[in-house]
Amino acid sequence: MLGNHDNHEGLGPTGVSAAVLATLRDHGAATRLTMKDIRLMESHLQRCAASNAVISRLVNEILRRKRAHCQVVEEADVPPELAIGNSLIRYRINQGEPRTGLLFHRMARQADTDHLSVFSLAGATVIGLSAGQSAPLLRTDCTFGTITLLDVVSQPVTVSGPSGRRRRS
Image (cartoon, rainbow, N blue to C red):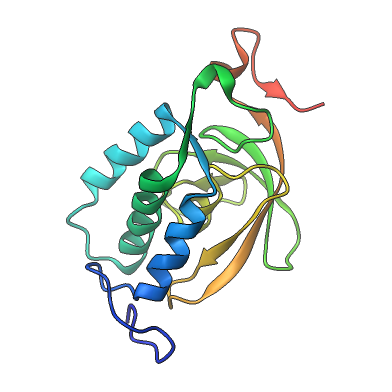
């Protein structure tokens, strides 16, 4: 299923087409991640290395590309518009209605509209984006939609200090 589309020439090592991999690489270079987010992503990649599920392979490819090409941001220097782990975000997929959810680093066992796992296609794509930024959203058939980060409503305590979640004004 992966990469077997007429408009995608050549396959990468995970069975994803070279054109899809290039799009993911280019998107990864436009993201900023904290060391904490990178460590949690690496832990996930190690745990799921043996998985043969289509979504796991696609998410792993997105996270690998982001990790390899992102700009690292120190925890103390995280701008309030950056989507990091445990941020409450507003986002839109394609032309759909805006959604609000907590971007988190655990595997999601079931669909939950109030949470967005970094280990889902949408979560893996949106982490590291800044408010107002859009990115190509990879689908399970290796075509792309669009995800737009509309706003970072709040960030976790580790970024804002002991007083609680940092809220945007």
